[in-house]
Image 1: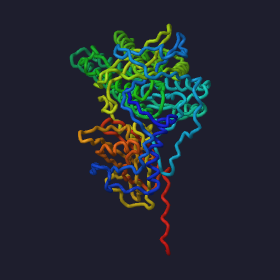
Image 2: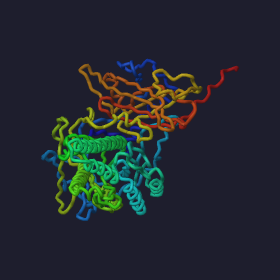
Image 3: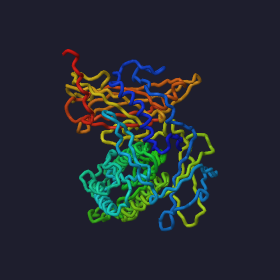
Image 4: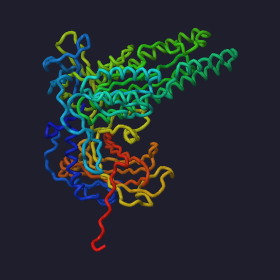
Length: 634
């Protein structure tokens, strides 16, 4: 469920139009030169001055950029394929019936998307030229087709299978259809970008063949050899005797190993869901459909009680609610997930040639239990893949070695679809789940679409996720990660001409690694406040709050310094519309070593809804301020 925002002029993409709107503010800043230093008084009516200094945007109130409609709108992408998995084209709106909670919905708009009829991209630069020392998290993408993301999951996939995935992707790229836009991401204990969106297969091949894409051995996956060694330890302990003390030690060892495995699985779930959330926030500001093709060994959403353990519930966990919340965030960002089991066709690893099988030969009953556990776990993993695909409108691929064919089918499906929108008749946003069913009058076709959503107002805090290791803001501020775009903003960074011996006030250096001299940087934020939540009180005042943070990172990825502020906004109705059009200026100061290749990670968060935006700027990209001209006569 999303709110509809109508941007004028219509031919511009949402991101590009927002950039123009924010550009009005920066044109004024550019004319006045260096912004006021942090700590000066704000002229924003009723603004809280204690932690941040919001200032009104000095832009003209032209009134021509934003018309906002608070009408909830459900956007539904529907893929229709025949019995051979080929896209079905040419259907009309009358061919579809949409049911929400069993009730028919009135389709308000209908559009067919065909890859073979996508318009050519507009002749605009892929990078926005904002002028010196101005940076933004707005990414321009031509709105002439879907975006495809290949996620190489090294966290949940054995290293040997990662190599096969890369080989299959290189084979697929040999016949990549012209105009297909693909980005490549990697997942270890965090999400990172290997290659941004491009249509050049040579660039993608170079990335997949490079060292960064080679993958790594997951520290949280137990190899078959390690599992056999653990079982041998338990067997050897049992062979020591049948006295009660030995039996208790054996039970304790078995319990410990089971709980350790649960702990490792919990960590994998935490890192995986954090990465998926981060990816959804990055893609939320990009227009159109996005197809996430996720190569993984998957992960279970629950661990059932083990009756063979002394404490059957000690190794039990359930992550179903967290997976649902992540899927909901992906659907709000119009992301369809296509999970692909990177292991292909495989058997129980305990039965492979790399494992001696001695423990099973000594204890056939243990071997039977290991087989049962393997089939149960595999079924659970495939169920998770299927659930994630169904929840977001994608398709899961497993029990196949044809990974390149799976990618081809996923991209083909995700590039040929119908978009339907409707307004729900039930206007109670109580957070409950609403199932969606789509029917068509066509025979022998398959439909792929998201099967429901949580009826939660997007301007209210999201459903809590219990197992995530970091908050949305903490994840957004990780060095080298993607730039989330839930809140679009720009910054102007003004360095001091001379170095300083001390850091700016309120800076929070980490440890004692930073040594003077320092250079101070004044950062002026201008945000698109249409994506910040405001509430109103009977006196007509709009209330909102944001936090904005800058971190200084070393080349090794260590945090060296931090500056964080909070702005409490209390805006009269007469000023609210102007602020929605032109944004609000926020500023803070940060100090960094005057020498060396350091990085600024800059983030902005709506405290109420937990929406975030962030960007990363290398200090080498910031142009120095020209020295002041000498006074007359000197």
